[in-house]
Image (cartoon, rainbow, N blue to C red; front, side, top):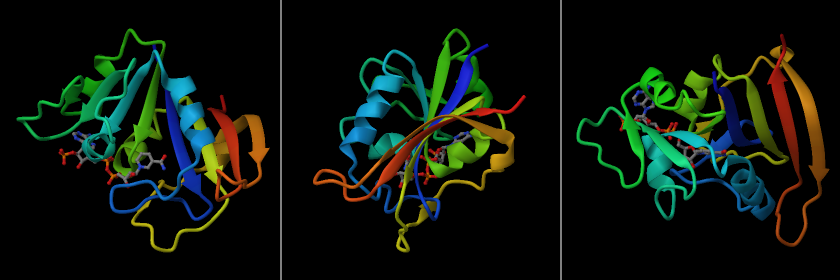
Length: 165
Ligand SMILES: NC(=O)c1ccc[n+]([C@@H]2O[C@H](COP(=O)([O-])OP(=O)(O)OC[C@H]3O[C@@H](n4cnc5c(N)ncnc54)[C@H](OP(=O)(O)O)[C@@H]3O)[C@@H](O)[C@H]2O)c1
């Protein structure tokens, strides 16, 4: 069975996006995302896929959830249900659920692990939010804090959680 891992960057008010885009530019978060996900499957919603600036993410199996029957996205596997999406990833060691909100909501109850970048700011204009998490079910196993700097407008923390047994 694959490990199902959520990877997300979440603001203090749970904001994750606006107008189909991210709310921040954090190069170290992008770097960590690439390091963790390269060589693995990435599972996303159709809107997140369409927001990727260069289409499918290279060196990863891109699985895109959509109900559009004519979906024919380049270099990816369109799937009409979460079950189909996970079925085509069954041989993968780790499947990374990369968003957006609708897909995080569905994946949360199945996920084994979460790689969260907590962005220490609030975004009252956001239109997309991470679902409510019952943090009592999750154990923190890694934690790194970083201050804002000239390349990162906000302080942030990389925290990895696993589901408590
Ligand atoms: N901060 C972060 O870490 C992060 C990460 C990713 C995305 N985001 C942000 O999140 C926002 C997008 O999130 P979103 O919730 O609006 O959209 P989304 O989850 O990316 O995509 C939603 C679409 O996925 C398809 N879908 C979802 N579940 C499905 C299922 N079970 N079966 C079939 N199709 C399914 C549907 O596509 P069809 O309409 O084609 O049927 C649905 O409209 C953007 O602002 C993006 O920048 C933030």
